[in-house]
Image (cartoon, rainbow, N blue to C red; front, side):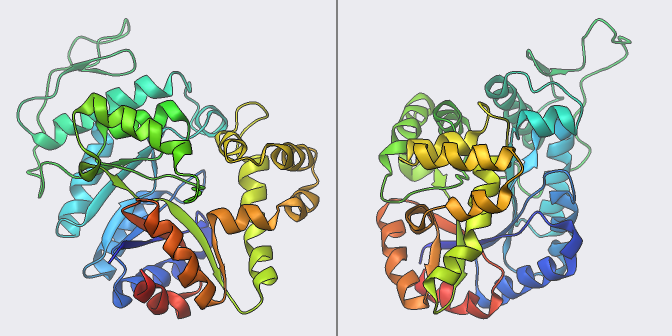
Length: 341
């Protein structure tokens, strides 16, 4: 069966509901559950709680924002949740975007590609526990060696013996260069807004990264997210999903610096994407939402009666992905969806 995961919402105001969804996904046989963070609830606290509330499901951070934590702190978190869960943790990392990085965390967005490369390298060192950690990069120096350093820092090796010395690392990536980097240095990739019938939009980047790593496609795990709404009325289901697209295309980034906007343009929705962004950024979010076409939702989501979703899943399976992370708040359909995968 195809790997099937549950992608939980950002909304930290409904944590009991989110936990209940994860527990239900565990009971019906989902393979993984993933938590997100923006500038509300953090991803890792929820996962630590779920480690004690679930039995077998893998626990993924989807994603931990790299600018919010040092690489060593991310590795400490990964080791801790992996130990609490008996080796079920999946470390999902992402660069986030300049609005959140600089507007919320108060640090420079900088060069995300280089930051990511260095970050993963340090995390791998910590987890391997082979020697005290040392690293000299443009973003990270361990021990710190900047002009304001005390000179007292020394290389350290974690006092914790990890349950696993190589916890799988997944990267969230959208742009071609970021996708190639994920395929080069990570164990897996967490794409957003995928169109399974246009795999060529992203396949070339994956192939480029794998070639640099010397690995085959079989050694790299691709787990895209698909928003799901089940119901007999197809148009009502589409209406329930339209706000997500309006938010990401219109509001998740500034004009000229919105990675989700760029991606849907690459899928052929450039004209509508510009209209949605213009309306959203001018304060007309409802009008922007109404403009999201059925074709966009049908291309990248699973909507409508369960029979229609079963048929649509065929396109996802044929696209070569290794699994699918479902963004759904309808636990009554989890068992049926698990059976379709």
